[in-house]
Each structure stands twice: as structure tokens, then as C-alpha cells.
Amino acid sequence: MRKILFALLGAILSIGNLFAQDSLSVAADAAAQPPALDAGNAIAQARQSYDAADFSQAITLYEEVIAQKGASAPLYYNLGCAYFKNKEYARAILNFERSLLLDPGNDDARVNLQMAQAQTVDKIESITPPVFVTWSNALRDCFSAVTWSWFVIGFFLVFLVCASVYFFGRKPAVRRAGFYLGLLSLVLAAVAWFYADAQNTRLQYRDHAIVMAPTVTVRSSPADSGTQLFTLHEGTKVRLRSTLGEWAEIELSDGNVGWLPQSSVEVI
Image 1 (cartoon, rainbow, N blue to C red):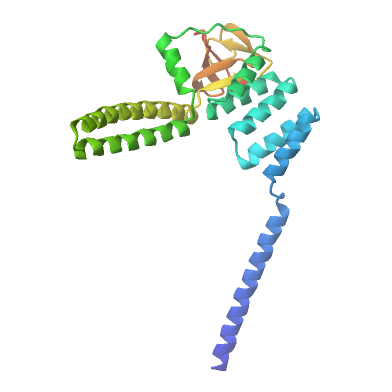
Image 2: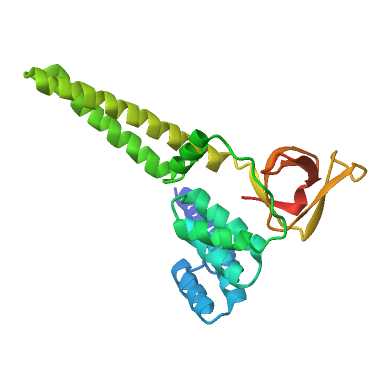
């Protein structure tokens, strides 16, 4: 019996030593890792640096917050403003575009984007889409995917209330009003769902990019031996059609198509 007790005591002590070693190992790993970033303090410091015209420091702080804590429309907007003040217009355009992707209704980001684009070399005439497409895109960009989703929920709840009024109402006039209002709510819910899906697709499948290289030659094929078609400069927005190895097939807003190195562009 005594041997059994000693054996159990030894086992308990061994397990305790293992836990102690694991705790020390975890503590050592935690000490080796850099301290967690205080996002609020970093953003406050970035604003102070921006107000003091230390735009490089503001850029560094905003980039650190985005890298460690995740992106948001305001962070991209502030970072774009810092890059613009630092005269890094391609980076400013990239971040204003990213801000608008998350918050399409931000008029300040849209205006600043246009100001940054005015500093670029390439002035490409866009193919004008049909009027109804322009109006539809403008309506889509009034709200983000999340906001459109809330509209879907709201309109559908109104539809349910109107359906209840139609089926359980006693007065013909009230039932008629419930029917037409419910039908209108259902149509609006479908429209909101369409735009919510469109905005979500833009977020999930990002097929636009900004040229980051000072100059890049666009070729007819994905190889250095391809025929030189035209030259693009930093800050130009392109649509990514496909990729092959280290090359990307791009399309400009005027319809021109060609291949350039993927390393020369950064996806929005």
C-alpha cells in the first residue's frame, strides 16, 4: 500500500512538473512576442502626427493598425489622406478606393479620390455605359452591402405585416391597401437584395487594381517578348481579367486589353 501511495505521489509530482514546464514555456513565448498594439492609442498618435505634418509617421501607424487589427473604411480613408499629403498619389488612390469599397456612400473619400486621380499621368477616357446602368450603379453605391441587407430585412418585415392585414383584415379598403403596400414592399426587398448581393460580390471578388510601378509596359502576351501595346503609369486603375504565372491580363476603362507583371499592380 505504501508503495502504491509513493507511486501515486510521484506521478502527481511529475504531472505538476510538466504543467509547470508548460506554463514557463507559454510565459517565455508570450515574453518573446511583441506587445499587442493599442489601436486606439496608435490612431490617436497617427492623428497627432498628421496634424503635425509628419505624414510618414502617420502612414506607419495607420498601416500597423490595419495590419494587426483589421481594416475599416475610416482607417483606409485616413491612410489615403496621409498618403495624399505625402504626395504618394498611387497609394492614396488605392486606399481611397478601398475605403469606398467598404463605404460607397462616403462623399469625402470620393472627392479626395478624384483629387488624387487628377495628379496621375494617364488620362483615360471611359466608355460611357447606358444611362440606366449609370443610374443603377449610382443607386447601388449609395449604401454598403450591410446597409442594403438591413433594407432587405426591413422591407420583408413590412411585407409580412401587410400580408397579415390582407388576410385577416375585415374592411375591403384596408385589405386592398395591405395588398398593394405588401406587393410594393416585396419588390423593394428584391431590389435591395439585388444591390446587397452586388456589393457583397464586389467585396468577395475584387477584380480591380491600381498600378503601383512608376511605369509599366503592357504587352500583347504574358511574356517579355510580347509586343509592346502601351505604357501605364502609377495610379491608373485597371480591371483584372485573368492571371497566368507572374502575369496579369488587364482591361482599361476605355476597353484596351493587355498583359503586365502582377508585381506592378496591387488589388483594391
